[in-house]
Length: 279
Image (tube, rainbow, N blue to C red):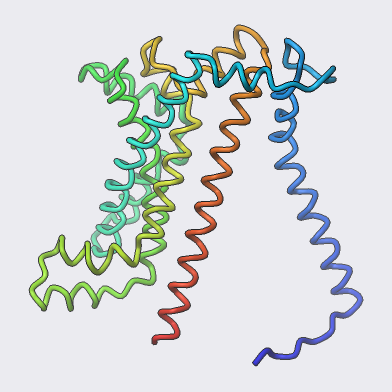
């Protein structure tokens, strides 16, 4: 039965209105620079400038008809998918290990696992170049995938770690007492409960790879193009509205990822509510 709420005082109403206004202004501040590029993708002009003389779909049509951009799109999705899968495996294993173990220096190990999130990417890319060069992994897709997997793994560690915070480890002990091997117990007991965290982290890892350009510039061969790299080259050579068309495609992909993450978040909340009701 819903509880009756106390009426707001005049001061509380003013505070609520001010907070709502600040939230709206913050949203505009964050979104406006992103949306500013959208109209330019439908410009009839030849340059990336305002004001727009007339609107046209010619740059969107040129984007999807271009073999160069098509290759970049395929490479971005292929590299993003491969690196996200590797990041999911590595990040999940690391998160489970951290959740089930308590050892000296655990906080230091956790900080090292999350360090790719805070270390400047250019420093990380330079280090990867000198690490991969003796192994013959520079100018290869394998090297790019491994680099992006390392950048995406911390996202999986964070999301799976958050899912494991409410996990009852007695379930794993019960499975072991019934004769289930560790891998079978993980697959049948733990994985279904932390799956939303795994998938959410995987989506973030894919997004991190999809818009990453610095390590690609250091590690990729000239013919190994991705969307961000093609955009970076385009900005140096010509300010064509084709860049805006590519930006719109990337924004649509990011929007779809956000929708997927929101759906997973709601599923997780329903599962947690169901567990509380069962308890």
